[in-house]
Length: 195
Ligand code: ADP
Image (tube, rainbow, N blue to C red; front, side):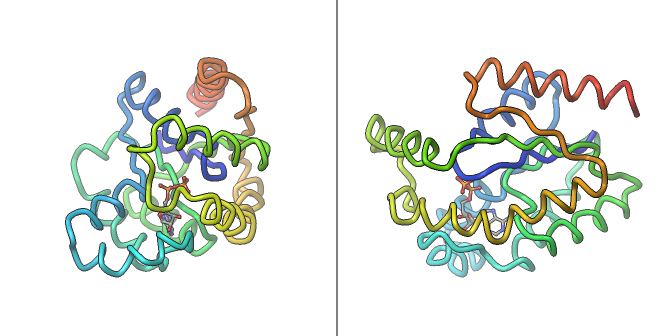
């Protein structure tokens, strides 16, 4: 089963992806984590991406599609993947469809974690306040607002793309973590019995 966890910065995609990884044995692929690892390792990809990420813009499609293509080759991805933070543009979504089709696979479900923008900013600011050591370079209030704007402009249109494919399911991302996980699990069980 191949899934996409969808939602704005701070919606809890990573948290839910980790729960699913443990419960279902699916591999979590977070382009944000992969790009941060490239920055930390000082690779060419990292050098190209750092300034873009620090200001809250999107890394070019060909770079992120390239890292996903490479990662999907690995044997641990054969049974299915949870995409977290990817795709973020319609071009990325189309490239993903092509990559999966080449393996006889397709996206089974897209789970949107629906949250309130202002609550997101508050949630992330308190996360940074409580644990400043873990804050990312792009966790400043200005950059967070920029990331939300980029999400609305470039990524949200993807909802229609997946709604058109009949794959979009929306879950209340403002609920407590355990309730969100339970809702996500219900959705997956439905898709599993339907397919
Ligand atoms: P968040 O969901 O909190 O914004 P991520 O860890 O998913 O954080 O992404 C951090 C940054 O990495 C983004 O702001 C962007 O610069 C870059 N990035 C991650 N995934 C993508 C992607 N699919 N396309 C373009 N840029 C990406």
